Length: 330
Ligand code: LMR
Image (cartoon, rainbow, N blue to C red; front, side, top):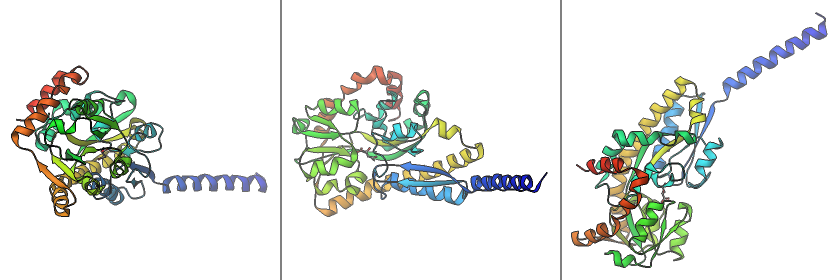
């Protein structure tokens, strides 16, 4: 081999080993996009997950969290995930209807009596089956995460369903939620979470439904003088990833990530329970918004008006799933 060829070979070897070193040096980037503030159950869960991964998979995987709809809103995030532009998200269970009908169960008004019932249903066979209900669409549910029960906020007091007649409410992109507000002759409008504060502040809409932690962290209570403690539905999340990304990971990495995620979810769930109480109290203490408690008779009127929505969606959701959810109340 002449000198020229020898140096070319040496150069090629250097280039290849540099490439290998570079490939080893670059960790897999895992973008986690969500729409809420950091001081919420989901915000804290995402941070916990990022920190656990930094501790346990240093140099192999790096999690970057994008809160407050910085990277994608929930209306875009699943498409972006399928394109590989984001690897993890946790949209509310109300935002999957384009991909699966079964998760619509979580939007049925007055189905779950409290978060204990939600937890029991999610852990049941019916609830666990729903995690894989989008696998034919390339999306894998990795676990449920709690936020809490929803309350109704408005510019006028809402005590009985008739008080909602003709009023405009922002809803998530869910046909069940649309039917729920139509059942009380209100006007539901599907809008992204990032627009809710301005819509309320400018009085473009009259009200919205959300959990205590979202009403508090996004300051909805500052522009909504009344909050009815209705606990009429649940707002929980599905932590979701793309099958292509997840199954393409090295098995050990995938196992470690799932472990870290389960721990982060447990952490987020503990925060959810605490925040529901603390943020409600902070809103009461602020005196910006009056919290209305319903009498049993008033609450029964809401139940009676909204419950017919169940039968409207029973065929899509599956009556067996609804029955399993009902039995989780015991
Ligand atoms: C909403 O759009 O109201 C919620 O889904 C926001 C969230 O992620 O908690």
